Length: 439
Image (cartoon, rainbow, N blue to C red; front, side, top):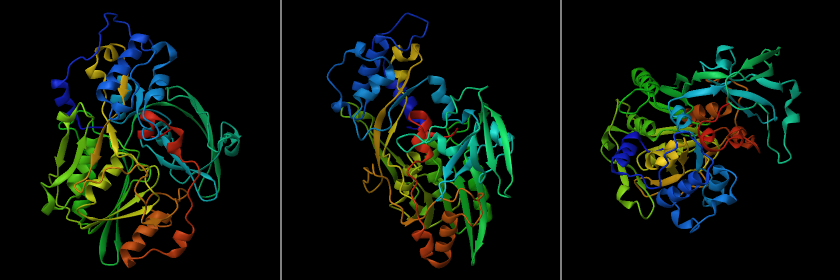
């Protein structure tokens, strides 16, 4: 998402581009709304030249069906429609649900990967590394679909919905917990620690999503600021940044992180550029680094996976011209494009609570690298180990990163044991939820 100040700048210059409605009652699935979606796409969509010249709105039973039909496939896997409140809530971490993620290990056993502290699951004490053996009384295998994926039938994220989970704990015991979905504030920092590796202090930071702290101006994350001050205070000499489950989020927060990570000597240099479609070129923009804090690192190690997308990839791409980067884990998702919400530019969409969030711009780093739709390849392919707690050096990806810092190489066994799951949690979601994936 484009940073807030840029969105506000567009808002001042923008105008209502479609017909308005005098009906005060939202009715989002009307032909008038579908016409507004189409006309707004023709104005703002990054691939606007690939859109049809006209459509018949009556041919579509829903706004989502319309959008899916007209987007530029296969490059666009990202455009979506939501509500204004859902969009605003997601980017400041106001969630609803159980509040956890999960992944399969190399033996196709399912484990909790993260648990948000204030979520219903977090308040019930759930932890990364717990194995899920049943959901609502059914073994995990019974939820596999004909396509090879999984549908765990947990229902929508609405408060009050309950599901039952049976876990095998690390000590071998089992427990069954009934958990009721509720609204909660999610945290982005899942873990932070400092290791002494040889004669070096190594920071380890697990960052799950780029979410701003509500009420802060300019837009930024208090969690990020607190973490960076912690690592600065510890005097770290190497930094491992774990983005393996980070689907993206706020570009403003990504910029905040980039400004902490860039070396002082490169402050003021080009961070990235963004490019809009052929009729919005006057809004093309660039962002320069503005150093925060005193970290002065020449190398960063990122732990990545196919769940690392969007703003995660923007951070990697923007730093690549200035630092030695090492990627350990798996290839990233591949999203070199971004979005901002368009209801503020169309009164029909705004009045009917339709938040249209299509791809509106592409980014490039200081060297012009822009198209990485296949993702960034991992330098060292190492499988996930969700059965171990955060910071446990038996976690294969963390272990590989620490090995690399100590010896400059990674144990061949870790790479030989690499596996790539055929289905990952990011595959279970689309649109807004894919950027902030959790159950």
